[in-house]
Length: 253
Length: 346
Ligand SMILES: Nc1ncnc2c1ncn2[C@@H]1O[C@H](COP(=O)(O)OP(=O)(O)O)[C@@H](O)[C@H]1O
Ligand SMILES: [Mg+2]
Image (cartoon, rainbow over all chains, first blue to last red; front, side, top):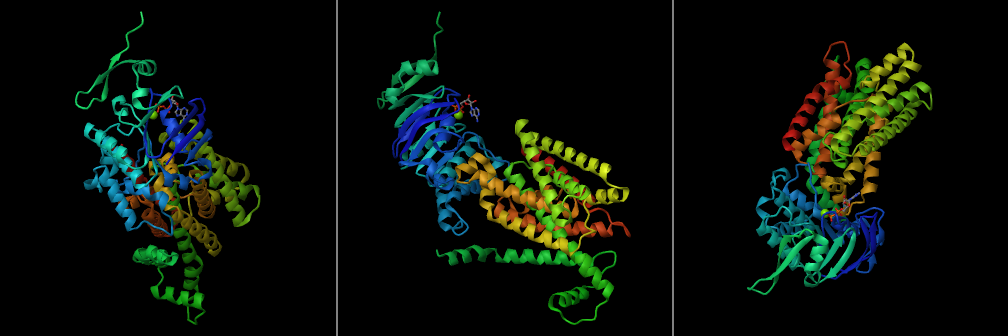
């Protein structure tokens, strides 16, 4: 699904962001803390009240869709979503079917199959009965991803999805979303992981200050200006890909 | 699947449970009707029902039959409606505000309803059962809005909500006391205070025709929203992301809760702890999913309040203990258990 943002704004936290996210691509959003990444993701999912500007999903203005229709197209995993309910892992993933169910099309065998697949995709098949409160942060994050997958969306919006994950599951998750046939928009903190995206948008103080292929966007100059670090690009002799090593900025005298 | 097939697929698996629920409820009502200061024989129940409902000819003891038909049965039915309505209100509020301690009593909704009903009773606006209910609805809505605004102004956390609820309850209870002190004569005052503690002794058939339809409608509204209620588990933002029209659902459900609470308070006064303790106890039995929690809580609430009403009649021979006192005696320890369980989870 194509997602277009035109002049998106929310208070002065996101200001005049326009971008076009192409069908099937994995789009990474990077930027320092508080630069408006989470807010922009929620704007793209239509979850912020009184937003300025417009979002179009495959050329349809988001405002013309009902909440339910949006949820059939976009699944969102927010940064901090927790529950005090004694839900089981399976309960939590089954919630993902909500936008597809109605009193006359209740949860059926097909939904069970979709939920099973989603659980398998995040490597949680063996833990379906575990109560939410007993899960680690990383396990909870994987369940959120599974819930989003069970929603069978055409676009997946993920806010720092690799947080809390051990390195194996970080790589597994990034591999999984890159292989999905759907459009993925995700905020990332690890700039080396951001290199794996098809394209990157860089947020700074509510504006999208750069947008393009990782190698074009992640230049030592941008990294110095936006992230206030000295970035040393290095080449992996194995496959020739670029890695960054980060050093503190030298203090101006 | 055709609509018809879908409907069958939907109802067939739950039929045994619905049947079991109906049987349990019928047994509880039966107990509520025959147990009391004068125990009535089981046979009489069948006879009275046959006469009243089918116009059969039976020789009946007029006094016993009168007690059964005019006092015990309406009272038991209202107790059932009340218990179900309060438990449902607790389930819905706990899900919507994501707070284990939410219930109409703690959030000040009952106190608001009480103040509204007392204003109508004493200031003579409107009058009659409908007037009382309307006053209670106004008071309950005012209390809910006030508590919600205060909680939000205080930062919107779970502790703030409970504290705002306490402030709201105190305010509206004080308002009620003030109105009673200012406008009621001694006899009215005694009656009102007794009613406010929760009291079913004045219940007659007209009360049944108010309570049952309102709680029945409230139950259907809750049942129609079991999925949205589930979707609120991770907060209103997550519910919106799952396609729930959050504002509309909140409005409909809170209106249903306020209407149920207001009607029940105007009929029987304010009865605490049912909305708080029953949903938690039922969660332990059937889990947190609302497709089961909603009907099971309604059933458990109904049975619990019938039992509490029986206890209120037989606990002290020759005297009626206000039912609110009975529910508090059972509910306060239950509440303590919830607090302890929540601490362990946090
Ligand atoms: N609902 C809100 N109301 C007011 N300020 C907010 C709200 N949400 C976020 N902010 C502020 O907006 C800024 C950007 O937040 P956010 O989008 O979460 O940034 P990021 O995800 O890039 O760290 C932060 O300074 C944050 O405090
Ligand atoms: Mg963020």
